[in-house]
Length: 371
Image 1 (cartoon, helix red, strand yellow):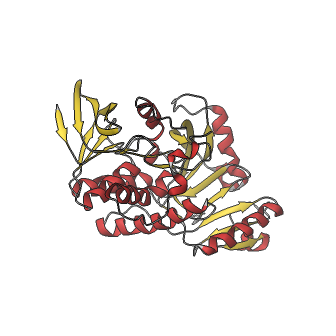
Image 2 (tube, rainbow, N blue to C red):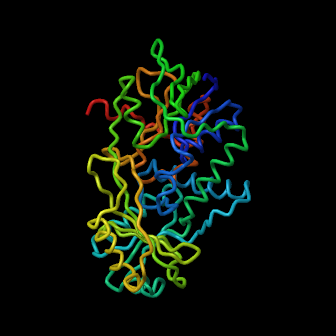
Image 3 (cartoon, rainbow, N blue to C red):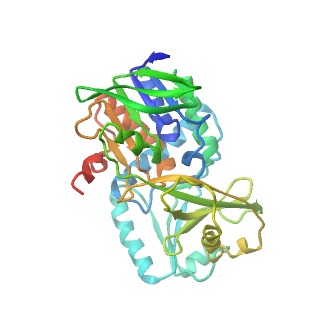
């Protein structure tokens, strides 16, 4: 089977689908190849945080753009993605941690991001359900969260409505390169070999991106990591904010229906195994140190997704040297859901030669070439 497109996107998660959507809106003929039946990996297996604070400067600017795009897409489509601008709260156990958060807030203000430092008394007053042990917190009112399943499928369906073709069950196996330029790719689908002719290939397949890139001599420093999570029974409202602790390495948020979602443990074991371990559950139990009432809730289930970590925990975005027509968008290190729409728009800008809305040169894949 053969087909043609102006752009082939490998990976139908939030990043790949957002790229396909924005490319189609620019008049490109786009086909998306997704190895599963739809977005089933990290895009829908996360806590749904939409956070601009506590990020690297480039990521922060992307996150600010992305949060606005999430709101815009929800308004345009009329889809309820359970978006809530409830704020993001980074709690601090120690005074030095709180001082570092305050210093970070000064830099964030330069990008127009307003944050507040809450001391111990303010935190107790404004978030009374949290533990009294914290020295304070940094709060960003414009951050929030959404339902990642509803939100990701909203992007997929918006892309389809814009004319994007989706091929599910299509596992990309080879990139076709001629004269230093990608000309398309090959995939298996339903036992058949599929040939896709496309002058541009966007590769957004998360941790699976590295193996296919290696077949054309492109080495991408992507490490798979298991991101385990758990969810409680429904309980009355306790949290408006998405709450996290860098010291405890745990985060939590309460969904609209009342369940409390907990995450924050990343396990690197050299596999793509998504079975949650007892050690990971024990780590997630640290969330009780943030929200004591969690200890009295029934835990309904656990699950995990597979993230793609880079050495500096920042994305790989751009065309690696020596292979024209091949654009990598991977390595989001757990930040891909929030950043997805802005990354997708940036991919479309790079493909069509437009100036990018956000300077993403610090994210170029070649930054690790000399390492």
